[in-house]
Image (cartoon, rainbow, N blue to C red):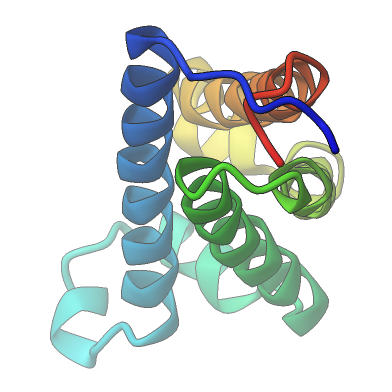
Length: 143
């Protein structure tokens, strides 16, 4: 039987912050998926065009990224090894979505260079959560 290691305070802090980050991602996905006409009227036309012309496979990748990210955080907080694999699936969703945005649209032109901050941060955090979950698994925190 494997030895279970008691997690440090930093484990709990990182896990809760990750849960909050991914919950915000879920809210962003839901907000974009269920956008009303009133909400659309508040978005600049060029940005709205990008959103409305997003292929369904990219929207699906967005859903995978945020829902698997949230599930990964829940599994992390429950100290389950499966968190690592779930974070890998979330990362793949993030990479598909941001790859499309960076290389198949004019999003940088529309949002400007500051529009790169959030997607790059999302990629970095997604990679970190894969690494963090694997580290926790290897150290016996996750069972």
